[in-house]
Length: 474
Ligand SMILES: Cc1ncc(COP(=O)(O)O)c(C=O)c1O
Image (tube, rainbow, N blue to C red; front, side, top):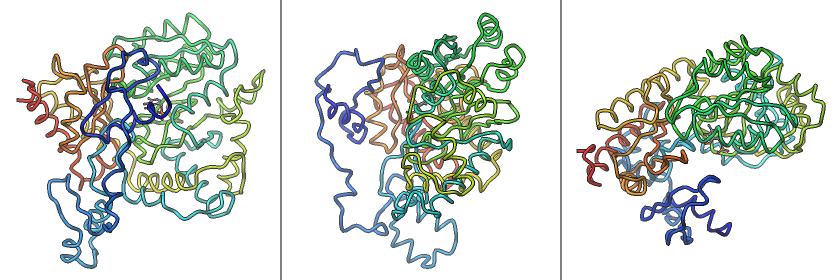
């Protein structure tokens, strides 16, 4: 497959006529079909409507279609903040709600931050913004320990794995990877790329390794690092971090506890200091609600000391903490610095997203995510659908992985859902990818009461299943 063909596979969800299963490094061996031919990219419709100003656009996927000009007549001053909010929401071109488990829907203010005029990445205005981002991250990760070190580096969540493997691992070191789905396989692969031996402790699909199994594994070998995927985005399985961290500190106190929280920071409670964690890594595009493109990571004083005491230099240049740590510390001290050019626009968007998150108590945010998640899970249960994560305590707040009725595959239902204005993701776990779909419920789709994304998605799922002839949907 040529690079162009591969690229266009990822834009296919814009095309309502064809659905192509997602290829991953694990599924490249799947048989190709005539659908594998390249499809020319079509610009989204709003780009063609050159004469349409944002105020003339309509939001047509909601329960109501309202012209903003009409709204403007009703309330010219837009003084009421709720009206302001809905007006702002409507400034995005009409589009199906993106309810995959990341990237997610954007708040208008976050999106607008991306169009910040160009500014110097070493000028004080930008340095101040970056510094504030790092300080807000300490609050989001719930750490007040001055030894904790936040990193924000251009890249995606995967760069967080490279940071861990390259900065904390050395050739021949051992890592225990708790497996709850696809993302553990990939993290283990990443360790191996740096010569770190990764041992995976696997659970049956939909479940997670039990505490006694983890204890046994920790007693068998001297592991330098243990990794836990907080929410595995391929299965919707949640790992409970605190009991695992307590166990590690009891059985193998020196082992560094690394949490892959790409799909949980912003929608699940994470107490970096109280739980005595060493690395929590995430990305901008999930429950934080920022566009993709940033690797976000918090390292403990213990992790930083481990890095400083390495016997060999890290086998990476771009991801080396040697290069980034002084830059992050300078930014936070509001001192201009340079190692590699950051993306000012993304940092502005992250600043806006974090400011919005910080405007309300974190506990309120996590409670709301839990409440909406329970509603989703209850409703799909009433439709006769089952989740991959069967036990309630294993179920993530930010997403739900839903088995389709027997015989139905994602390519049969996803285009129908798209026509109804919602985008779900297909399966990702390599053993059962064709049997389930994934519904992401994070960020503004959950937190903004004026949006109806979640109800619309549940309705679309019910109607869609009925239309494709499933008994479950009837
Ligand atoms: C749990 C988890 N870890 C890591 C990643 C990799 O992040 P990215 O795709 O941003 O590189 C993802 C992506 O979805 C994820 O869900």
